[in-house]
Image (cartoon, rainbow, N blue to C red; front, top):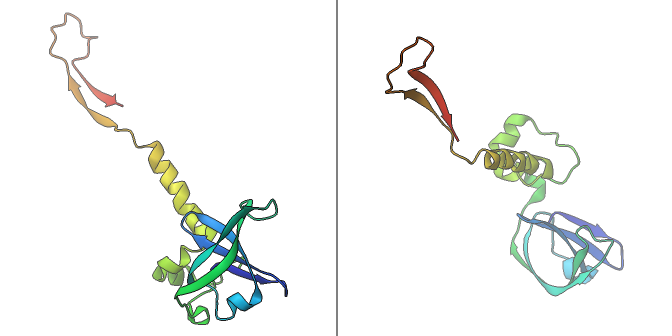
Length: 146
């Protein structure tokens, strides 16, 4: 669970996984024991909503907690706009820091750059076994094969 927005009659939960964030719509009674960063299982109906973050949302029928997190005991806040933790702390707790969208964005960009260079490049010396009559002919050069 990424974020909980309580509007008294209805509660919006932004649920995060590796593919992105989706909005859940539920009643206040359904979320009494839920806390940020809990791992949950949701059963509900998917419907479209132009105001939802991804233009779709889930109307929750049932929520089960799969794993609890003690958010107040984490080394730094995941859902704040700006991280106040030192770089060393973020690196020491990398699995937690990668839950932040801006940290994941760094790795997405890095992945795209690596995909661009997915082709095989070979640089090597090439030697010509040709007879030549002038000094202008090359009998050895460096080749780049793509």
